[in-house]
View 1: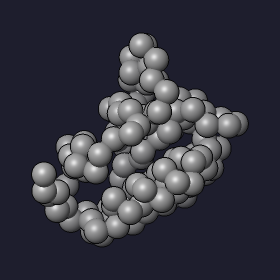
View 2: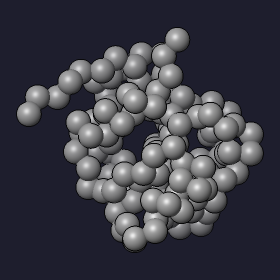
View 3: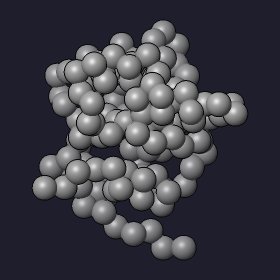
View 4: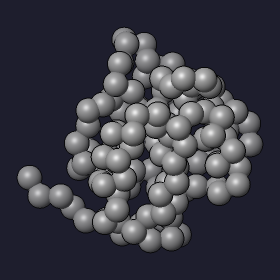
Length: 129
């Protein structure tokens, strides 16, 4: 299967991921798109970076030490209802998608995921003017 190429120059993604290997993998996936990559290791950092950088889309790990991704999403949603937030988890339980969407996430994906799937989901949610 060939990978479709995307050009997201001028856009910013915030990757919230506490696992360095997963973070490096996602960065590798996204490098060719031209998107500016920001990253946070936990929910507290995510809120701080979100507030200062205003990313166009967020990839939010759900289970992290300290503030988790769902709490961070709820806090972000107080000030911004529209930024797309994709919930990402490796340990999906039966109700996790419903819980993530009710917390304010725009979409839900489970790890491991392939590059094409991630890129398609991001492209569906990014706003182009």
